[in-house]
Image 1 (cartoon, rainbow, N blue to C red):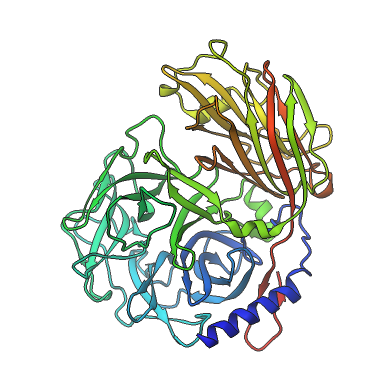
Image 2 (image 1 turned 120 degrees about the horizontal axis):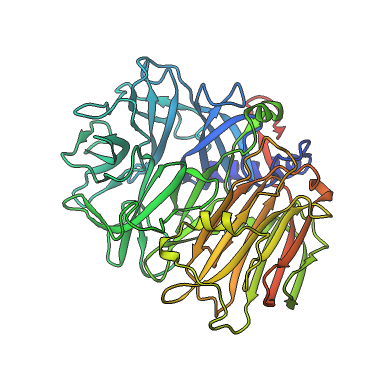
Length: 563
């Protein structure tokens, strides 16, 4: 434990000395989102908290800003905001992973408290197999070196499993019978499948007769995740938790989105039943309705919470990425809780992010009349954290009618973008905007009257985000399950080329990437707006300039380098 304290102290010193020297030399490189010093990054892998240190592994091409040569890169932190990059943990060096060390998870074995990694290897035949890796030196609190098991591969495809659709093992959980379980993402007979395996010793794995769950309405499931959530209380649960008042979340990545279902897990029979299954409803549950994929959660035993990471892709061209020298970032880590209705999850940026808040502006009880825009000045608009609470006037039958049960929210946001006036809405924020609003990204709400209740639509409109042509300017949307007669909250994190928004206290999340030409650095502006015909009131608005996270590289035998 003393060694762990020493290394944590050293990490603090290194970050303090070197972190503030970092200068952003590129307008689109983020300042407080996690990303490697250079080159390609995709899926977050094996996040964990171990002996006072947070670890994040991730899919990384060490040689270029495009996919390929995939290794497990490794970074550590004491607060999930400031990071130190270490050398790669796992590289493609063996016949069973020579074509890539793909996604997987970390599990901390109880008793011995030993972390162990399960990951997918793309072998010399381009078949996907599952492998083990363990720390080389358990006395090293930073776990800088990892060794592959001599028993690899420990799971191989067979009996109807497509060897090219068999990957991404989850964190394992242990039943009351002391047997470990893990699921692998796959596709069997064209159906998305969570293939279940069991083991007594974490080395010898046997495939179960039946999968944990499958769907005939989806294809291949990538990066599955499976974990319990409490239906009472606000604490996260360990993956092996067994108890009352518990539901289980099953997440699968497919169709460029991360979908999840909530249901009940019968541990003795290893049977999972979803309350509403994948694709069985017009409104699908997703972690994020924007650019967010291949996510991975972990249980933070230190603060008794479950934390979610997600890969945020680029929306510019491959040639742009090569010119930048990097591609891909991670979302701000989010806490996950079950909503009090039990029907969906609620996500929120981790509390530690607030340590980066600097200069603040506050507004109270401001009326925004229909068709007006006003600037929120006094902060760094290209790097900010904004919280706003909207209050609507009394309304009854004057609201636009909409059959929301048969409408896709993204489609609705595209049809009724920020420039289309309604009665109540669009109202919200214009971020990363130029002085003349030629460039702007609009995050806004609209209110509709549905069949039996009023409905809140949340949109993120990138259609005018940049004068650049070779950029994806999709519009994203989600319905927010809140009562519009109450106050509607919006929190938006702005980080140079990234906009993460949380509506209804985290009931709907939308992440976007934008690449303005005019609205960069100190030429970026922030506005509140209301293009509806009815007035809207800002009950409270608070906005902060955000400091740069301290991120350094550490190499044995030489002075740490600044990212």
